[in-house]
Length: 381
Image (cartoon, rainbow, N blue to C red; front, side, top):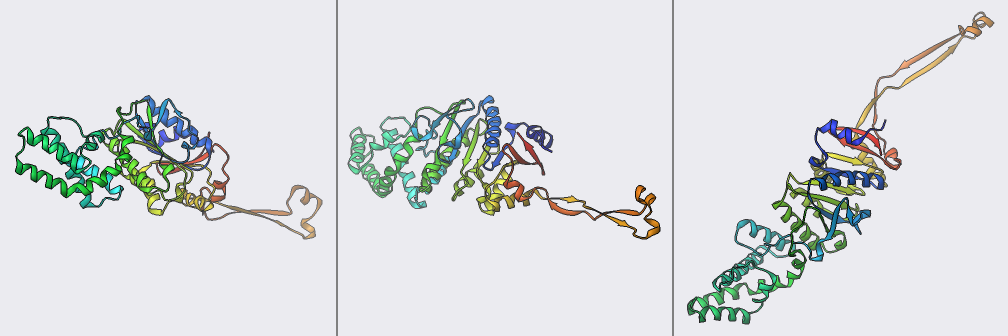
């Protein structure tokens, strides 16, 4: 018997929709749309900024006006996810930049040289009386030995540094100039994420990782920048993950593992069971409410069958014994059935799958299985 999935969640968890994390797996469009709409409307009502990690081609049927949210492409340069990206005045900022550089292929030594270079630029600007955040435009003023010498000449001419300091600083720059030059070639990748305004509560920032399927460093970079912002605003952020169920999606698992505990998350996938066993375990532990609609891959249906467990089924058998002797086969006995004996046997309970994989593979549109609080039930929208 089908249940109302919202009431079922309330009975099982005693929590509201926005306090839970949902996983929806399957190809049923109606289930995806209805469940997604209910959760996103609740997030919008509570003023949460939405981040859409889109590992599909075009948001998998979700419109640009997403439940009240205005969808912006993170690559458009309209929003700022890391205005202080180039600041290296704290261990936290240094660690974040090192992580980003690692995603781009910088080893530990080269990353530290980049950080030293940024500290050099910051200190030089301070001595010149320019108290401002580092930006791409500021770094352009140091892109080359001649420009650095010109900056140091200004300090020397104004008596701010001695000739010995001049030679020392120029030598320090020479030590890191190679890594600085490499870093400047990657600045174009950071530029779209350094917009002028922070995401608003009515904004959905779409990160199109699915469009960079062959560029894994770019996918990791977008995930890291998203997490950088969410970490600073965990309670006012929500994440929608759209997944086409294909290929290596380890970067999604890494992002899910790094989400703050207070950040709402909804993952909608064509098939999460195409992931490895370890990655599936991460999802099962992260999302307390899991919804499975129709799956096309029978191997995935078999995994859902195992997850849903078994139930006790009692089967009965009956038999009829008819006496063929003449004295017990009179017309009277035949009329009242006294020439026969009915026997019914109740067998020992046996284990059977709660939902067989063949049934999961052929679920009706709008029908799905909800796994919540250790219990499973079938519901229909």
